[in-house]
Image (tube, rainbow, N blue to C red):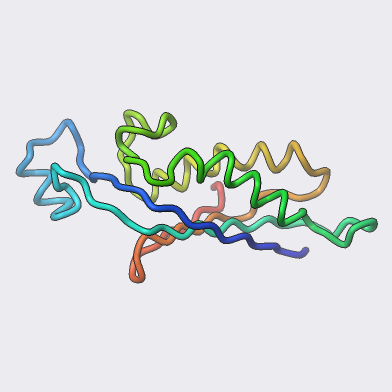
Length: 139
């Protein structure tokens, strides 16, 4: 099994808050990330696809094609956006990195499977800050 990795970047704002809670409870749980005026990050999105190299190309998955897919399906929809307000697949959801990476998976996994006979999405790693990141394996 070979794993190929594509890294992309995007900038986005969000607010961590639960609308069912009071402002005080949101501040207690989420701290400054519950700021009413949002806050932003320079995210790194790292997508790993696994499979066996194709005998004709030597590719597990064409990395240019993967980059184009990530750009059209994810980056174009989240870059320089407010994740809480502007991103259709995040509406009504908590805008944590954990939820965001799971939504990315729902979008990318079937697209990768539909464009390859052998490659599958293995992992999505979303880096929010130098200290905070999440990984998701679709489980």
